[in-house]
Length: 163
Image (cartoon, rainbow, N blue to C red; front, side):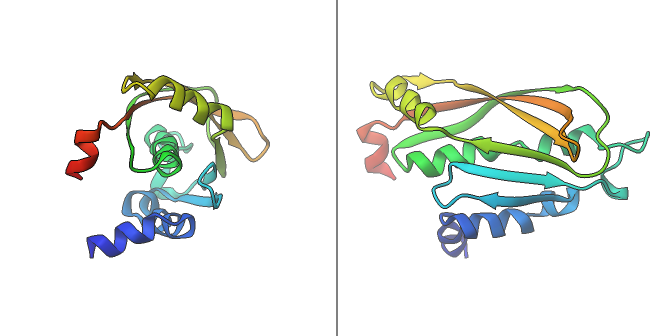
């Protein structure tokens, strides 16, 4: 079953389908609304429900963070391919206003971002880019700002041969 799931998750539609049925996202009400064919753009949203509200009736902060957690990592992994190691390294979230109703976040990998990664990792060095993601409500007002730092390194010939 693992091979079937791995093959499914390599296609944009398959990965989107899997993420929308993934237990933690399903349980939090997170939905991947769009994933580009080249994995360079993704849009996600989350409605406000009884099961993801906090004590004061707004979006639970953990749910707000989880809705943006893995996406830059997944996108970069799929764009760069098997020659690279890509991990989430750290994150920081700044809550700016209460989240009410549906909230949205968008991710985009530009040619410049990918080229910068390749330049910094060409010699086998690690690269730690930090990118910002805004979580906005339906009116376009920012609910939270998240900074995601990735760990990216080009695999050595020895690592590639062992996989």
